Length: 252
Image (cartoon, rainbow, N blue to C red; front, side, top):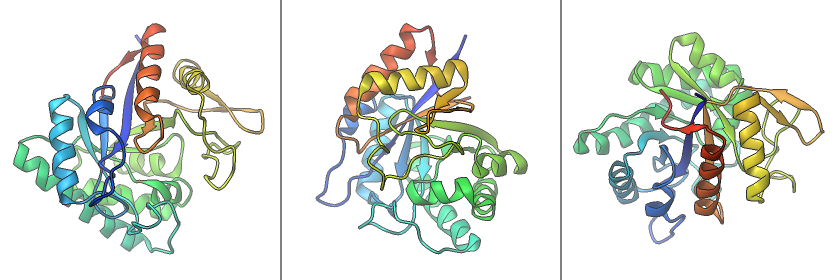
């Protein structure tokens, strides 16, 4: 049977600013990537999100990003590999404290936004992130863009590594995601997103904006929790996957 994980970037509210209906969306995914306070989130939001994820039997992962609240972690910064290492260790530690209180284990680590995309292309940043995860715990799973420098670094160091694909993003010929600066970066149609996901999961291919196919591995599908219709997307894609006989479960 074909199986796939459905993950969501979540816990990205901050102070008085609220993003996403966490209670509802966490009822439809199998893994949660919880923001750790650098690009979004705060201690209270982290605690609340952990509790909601546990209530819904959703596996929990750290979602470390660049220290850029204003830019939501989606603007590149000139950081060294050592800085990337330190940022990731620090943010994993912050979330781990809340998980320790609740008596649950962290499943995975998935970098956010610009840090994620930088690690997908920059081997040294990727290696630093993989090393950070490995040094904290060799049992953690590293989530990275399918067939990227980050997944290569994770596999090389010996981490269990999940190749991630995106339901609501378009792809370039090199396998990277289309920049959010481009008008065609996002997929807003549920039907189009579901068709893209099903093909990636069953055929291991995605059609690029250039009209060519790229081969990739789909272990986990990302739904962005800050999307305008995130809950509807999650419901629809999960239903469509199951209708094709694809089992939706946390990555193992």
